Image (cartoon, rainbow over all chains, first blue to last red; front, side):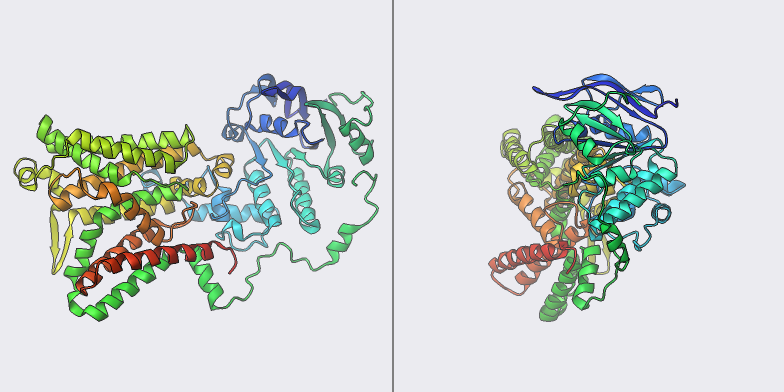
Length: 259
Length: 359
């Protein structure tokens, strides 16, 4: 069996008396889309934040390609090649698409203009941003310098996914990417996710939308009461099974542990 | 709910048959108003620039050569140099969605430090100026630390710092003014920014040149460097900026430290402008309001993340043009305040309109 790209063992995170993660395990395999589902308050977000560096777990170990890692901030996770598309998208509405794509990793002009005067290489950044949006078939967005606030919800999501795909070298985390979108825009984003997987990047997809999860996911991590309840394959189970496991209405067959 | 096994209904197929334009950027036809809106959205300094040009034109027409002369126009620059420098500092804070009530008091405090260190401690003037600049930077740093680390609202932090610094100024100086003649005799370097360049009838003092350079350098830094983009992003939405990889704390600290330094420079400009060092200079009390006025008229959004420092500079000039123009016209000075008040409200109304994405 291949080794997971990312694995976590025994993660614990407490907020006061609330235990959000209770010795939680997690595995992401190369090239797969792993959906993470769970009831509200099951600790999905905390798990994802622990992986993306936004939360530091109280105990437990995270390994990236076999090496133990400890992220103190999202920036460190990013430097390790983990890109996250947050539900809020983390974009500055007043700034341009290109500015947003390069936020926190701007390119400077070559030579003295860049080293001494710290001048941004606008042309290079815009060309790169245009190319990445093109790659994902998003170039219906025509003006790379237009402020993000002039984009529709689906376009913004597209830009955020493009940003993650452009810089994520190990894996991408998508938090509820279709939650705020209409039917057609959701479709575009799901296609985008499949596109990104086709380019070999593994994806963690957090979603409440069962049809979307069952359509794109290779495996589904079901989270319950702060830990991994089980991992299932969409082909082996129905959506009602998944919901039953997730809500505790039924106990899963404990065969597919750590699969 | 979503618990059925298969999506039996082909709802997405139906949607796919609809015209596929959902993600297209449509430059739908807009009227002149719409295009004006787009332009202002992209270049917010345009409104104050137009107001400034209009004000100069109106006063020029009414008052003739008396107002519309190199002498009078550069006199305006000299009269706004202190407020102009403070407005540059205030712009940075307001762009991060903060406000700084302590700018004027910090400037006065730093000018007093510069004077006292020469006349009481006997330091050479350049060292005294340097010490003043360091003191200003330290005050800015303290503000920044309280805002960024202790997470107090900037309004509260700087309201307190304003009183503290103002009181410290009086306590430290014993409310004694250092006279211009004394400074000229023993430490002319303190008045260095008084020096002037004569170009025909135009008079540019070094203080004015410092203000212009400061505005241009900051405009460049905000527009064309990563630091500037981070300042805007932090002001726009600090959480989004942090998640996108901006070090919000470092950005805020850099802004507040820089603002402290600029306020100290304003203190040095004050010595150049007045010749003397006076702890009771009005800048300590109203410098904050003057700078906020310039920033607001200049079209910088008090909600942060929008506007340009050039706008704030134009805002300071607009106030200067009104003051000089109305005085030359022999109007009661209260008219100046009345008009400035109307401009402030008008500017914020325009800002609200510009902030709307679609007109």
